[in-house]
Image 1 (tube, rainbow, N blue to C red):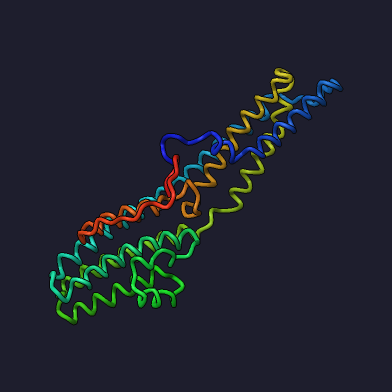
Image 2: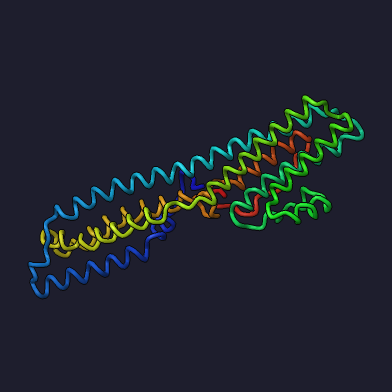
Length: 299
């Protein structure tokens, strides 16, 4: 997720540097052609690209809004994951008495929930979901989840089995087990919602039509500005084109909030906050340091 401050211009304009360079070369060619051969028939009324620009602006605004809705839904889901992870750990620690034979059991469940958050974030980004989990899971648990295509789903399965075991051992009563199962169901629902966003592709034809229309608008723009601005048409066309291109790039990045980019939902940072809170419930204050520090975004 991009932060409010310190976003470098290199990052912003680096997304469109090749497109802007191509527009500048194209506009320069049109200006040179017009000035050398005095081809007045190359000029078109300014109203033509203005009408197109207005329509494209509305379409880009609609697309940006839809892309932001996808990003915000992803962030809302991870907010619910934070709440349900805390609730699950609180329920485990309060429902199961702190006895000699339950201490390790309670700690195992809480640490596994931390692992679930990291595994889900890695899985959504297309990375190895088991990476880094060896510090939170036992070898037996790692061997179990390795058999599953979905590591987060396997961890929830282990949760369910252990809660059933606790019920049989009478560490939980039936009402407590039902409440814990409801919390697990909410976590499973959140995982499914994230996977729906990840696997639902933004309509390709919609993006393609807007992209082609915008390119046609940029191609027409020099012919409309050259009569009144001459050589100054070059920076004007570049500036106008850059505005449209940046808005399009912003929408493209926001529409996929799990693509391992600076504009992603900050799942790793959220998982670290969950780990901090849940370990503090266990009176464990050893939180691993972040592997990478970025000045203008968090992952």
